[in-house]
Structures are given as C-alpha cells and as structure tokens.
Amino acid sequence: MNILFIGDIFGSAGRKIVREHIGHVRAARNVDLTVVNVENAAGGFGVTPQIAEDIFDLGADVLTTGNHVWDKRELMDYMNSAGEESKDRARRVIRPANLQPGLPGYGVFEGTTQSGLDYAVMQLQGRVFMTAIDDPFRTADKLLASIKSKVVVVDFHAEATSEKVAMGWYLDGRVTAVLGTHTHVPTADERILPNGTAFQTDVGMSGPYDSIIGVEKDLVLHKFLTGMPGKFEAAKGNPKMCGALVTCDPASGRASAIQRIMFGE
Ligand SMILES: [Fe+2]
Image (cartoon, rainbow, N blue to C red; front, side, top):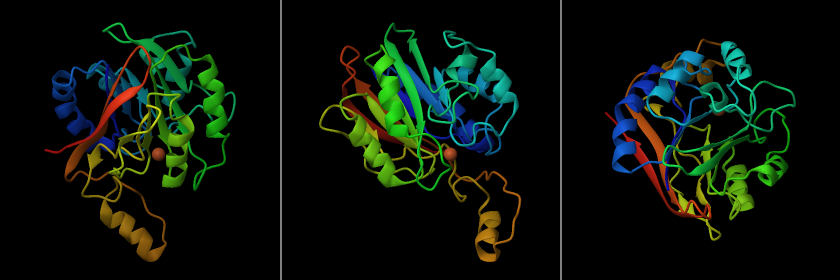
C-alpha cells in the first residue's frame, strides 16, 4: 500500500504547486491513500470549505489541519455538518485530537481506499512552545485502543523536534507512520523505526520557499528588527510541494519504506 502525505499547503502559491504535482505523483507511485495538511491553505491562515473541496477534487482522501484550524470560522460549520460516522468530505477534514473537549470536528478519520484498503488518519498537536492542550501521547493511546484499521497515519503538528522525535519512538510499532508538520522546514531524518513505523520530524511546507516559513520575508524581518506588530502576507516566490511517500503492508500496517519528496516549478 502506498501513502502520499503532503505537507502544509501555504497560501495560493502552495495550492498552485500542489495542483501541478499531486496528480503525476499519485499516478507514478500507485498511491492508494493521499493525506494533505491544509492548515495554512487560505492565505496562510486556516482553510475555507471551498479550498478544502478543491483539494479533495485533486484526489486527496483526508485533510489535516493544526493550530490554525479555527482561523476561518466557516470551517466550524463545515465540520459540524458531518456526524461522526459520516464518510462525507466534511468529515474527512480532521483537526488535532487533543484540543479541548467538545470542539467541532474529530481528530481521527477511518475509511477505506478506492483500492479497498482500510486505513485511519489521526492528528495530534504538540505542547512544547505551543498553547496548552491535552497530552498528545495519552490521547494517542486512547484513540489507538478503538481504531480498527491496521494502517494508521499520524500527522503530529508540533514545533519542537524533541517532542516530534519522542512521539515517533512512543508510537513505533503501533502506527504505520508518524509524520511531522507545522515548522514548514523539511528535515532529512526520514527512516523506518525498528518496529516498523515510518518517521520524519517534519515533511516541510508546500508553499513559497522564498519566504520566512511562508510569509513575505520583508514583513517578518521588520517584525524581528523592530518588534512592532504588522500584517503578515503569504509570499509567492519559489513554490515547492513537499511531503513523504510511505509504503506499508496493509495487512499488518508495518511500513517498509519512506521517501522524502520536494517538487518545484
Ligand atoms: Fe501550524
């Protein structure tokens, strides 16, 4: 079973480069399951239902988000429109599972690919250098107890490399892949951990790399140099689609290969 995971789409430049490359990668690699992180797809801040629909149209099966999930309020209504057992697109946009209880949406989606393979996608968010939320490690334990599929892809949306590496080891042998998102900078540490979990600290953003993690560099530099507030705008230059390709045994969920990918213009 081949899984394509695409890192954080940032703004229109990110959407455009993903539109350009997602199709040929899916075809060339016989991809069964496509997961895309979209938390910055709408101008760098959140995702709208329309953008989510557009990315589903490109072949995505599940969309993940992150700390920017509530930036576009209309996404709450979209998420609320699908019940827990639904397989609708609105149900296939997930958010970190360990946010405060009672919020819209879900942190896990379980489905079956068009090729007939069962899978689950889970999203967790880190707590180091981020807002205080529930324990992502214990949340993973609790959710794994009720997930039926052997194939489980985890998007760990976190800032600190230490917390992300820790999650990889914590879940090694219990999930198919732990793939990091949020920092927007791809790391060169992709590997299969000893018990069969594919891991990469951060798969990198799908967006403009002539930027400061997606934002126009002059605006961010101004903030660093002056400490003054300013409006952040999504950059456009040098877009790349980043992600990871994971191969696994659908019967056991064990990963056998992970490859880091980066496609430019
Ligand atoms: Fe984020």
